[in-house]
Length: 193
Length: 99
Image 1 (cartoon, rainbow over the protein chains, first blue to last red):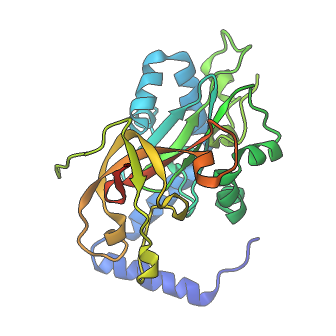
Image 2: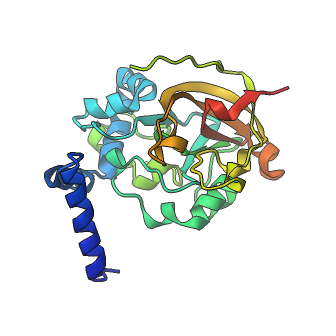
């Protein structure tokens, strides 16, 4: 995987960042800070948000109304990030997120997207054959559940708020958050206790 | 703040324009090919954003209402399970009222 970067690409990048700095658009420090912020982000942020929504009705409402504000409430800076939208699963309804045009992904709260999310196969098939895709993940939806594929085409980034699994009554947020993986937040898997 | 008016309300039946700007020259489009000419229902307005079709070419870009629009899977692909849907962000200039 880790090929050494091509010298001409490194030189091109250096010229590009120097041009951005010269134009007063962005500094090297700002670029470094943005990279560091993305490096720090991980699905644990999204999982913590879901766990809080499962235990706090007010936060649940905020999350569905304004995902960015809900992330900020967890101490995550959303400055410069695209607005975050959160879609709640419900009995009879399950969401699956894809970006058919490219690979839009809520990096501020999930970190870097996995390779499969960016693959042409997932992008083409999730939107046309979501049940086939979920079957290959080994994900079985409850009877009579409709699938709503969310094609992330424009300015928002989308995350799924899954239904709280049965058998988790009385669990605290940390224990609940451990059930919520990256794949759960994209919708390819369901959380199980 | 740029003011704008969202012209479609939740529940409105719309059709995505059957337009193919990619056949006329270089362009940047956020409306998926598979939805052109398809009918759907406005789920909710999502605010307004500068038109990426112009931003991509560094042209002056108008601020345009954005919507979440829901489509039936079967109506798009003629396969899949009844009741399954696709929810997509679409800019207002791509939408027209369904007949």
